[in-house]
Length: 173
Image (cartoon, rainbow, N blue to C red):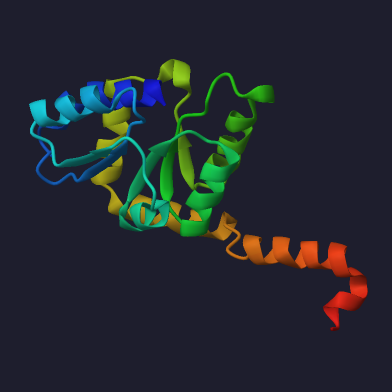
C-alpha cells in the first residue's frame, strides 16, 4: 500500500535511538521498491526490502509486529499465525469492510488501528517504538490474536465441499 510505504519511509528518521536493534522486512510492491530501498540505505537501517513475498508464512513467523492493511485474507493469516499488528484499513474498501475487520481485532486487544487519513511517519514510528519498548504488550496481542484464528479453515472448507458433493452419506464412507 503506497500510503503505508510512504509513512514507513517518513518514519525512518525517528528510529535513531533503536535503529541498531530493529530488523525490518518490508514488502513494497513494484512501484515503491526502489524508493523504499534507497530510504533504508540512507538511514543505515537493517532492512530486507522486497517487491513481493512468496513465502508469507516464513515472513510472519519471523515477525514480531506487522504493519498492513486489514483485508480479510490478511487478517486470517495474521490471526492464524497469532501475530500482533498495526492495521491501516484501506479507506476506499467497499462498505468500509476493512475498518470493520480491523475493529474486531482491536476490540479483542490483538491489534492497533491507524486510519489511513491519520497515517504519518511520526505516528507510525511512535507506535512501533512504544511496542519495541514493551515486548510484553506484543506478547499479549499475539495471545489474543491466535485466539481469533481458525487454523482448521482449509480442512473445514474441504469437509463442506465433500458434504456438498457426496451428501451426508459421504461422511460415513
